[in-house]
Image (cartoon, rainbow, N blue to C red; front, side, top):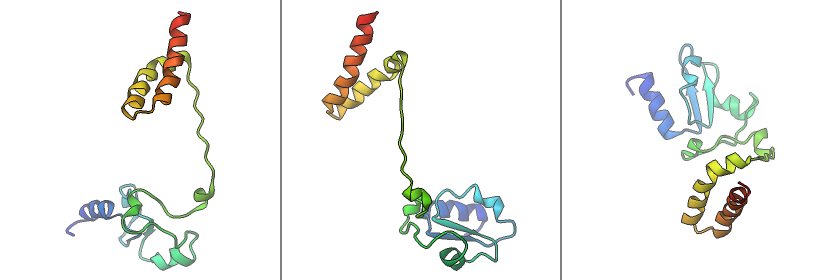
Length: 125
């Protein structure tokens, strides 16, 4: 490649398992890297150190999967639960859109779950 900017663009398309940025002041480029399994900064940080000693691990996404996934870490084993709560105004705002999407997907019970609630709100008015 002809420039570091071009290398960064290529890197983000290729999504390498390991990326070594062996330049002076490599930290300057880190924020522009969005697709890499693990990034190694500077002349004294070879990928083998990441595999065996620096605290990361050897289980990284290959074949471009770094565009969608990161390496195995403690977060891999953390259970996340999402919680939602809508107000009557909230269901009135998003409800019609949800009904449309559920209809397109032919998920009739999903649509009806919203329709029933919207009808209850409209009947209370």
